[in-house]
Image (cartoon, rainbow, N blue to C red; front, side, top):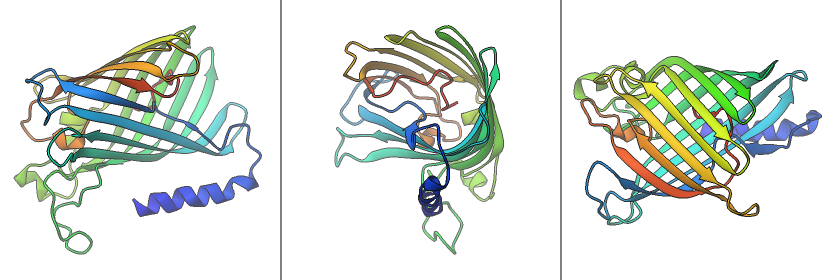
Length: 273
């Protein structure tokens, strides 16, 4: 993680070298804070939580009028704020770099490299992390996103490929790299639909996965009730891709409903996917 922070600092130092058409920093994925409750079990102070996400991108250079290159960083946290000692359930760190192009006629293409991990020490690396954590998860992948916009609507198709490490199963922990997080928990392809008219927004994203023929599903709605205030935000989630520590071999996907505030107008192509 320290290497990524140093990389971002280096890019910031290079900013005066480029004439930019974009602000130095801008929102990338949605930034929000929500209160969440489970739908698959009784609500208690130990399973109610607060979930928040902060996401920014830095524009170091414009390639040409239609293509740009940028780096971005997203942090997603699920916090058991009401339980004893208020522990963080999990954090997800997502730095990456991307190329984004306008193909014309409402078509947009985003491609790049992304790292995603929960920052916990990986089992079996005595040189750097002698301690072990059975919930350590990490992955590196290339992504390709196609977005078709017409009016207030977007159709999104996203594909990713790479490798991952750590799946919370004793037999598999002995292997340095595995595809299980992709095949069973993260998925290779996501299809989504987004709508936003500036006041009301809605989207749904579905990712088929190989675990018992289920899918990760996220559905969201937002309402701009006052132009100077954050949007009211509602989120339904089913699946393994919200907190990486939920990715346990043979586990049952959690189901949650969350309500809170969205601090930026939602990105049409939902870069999370």
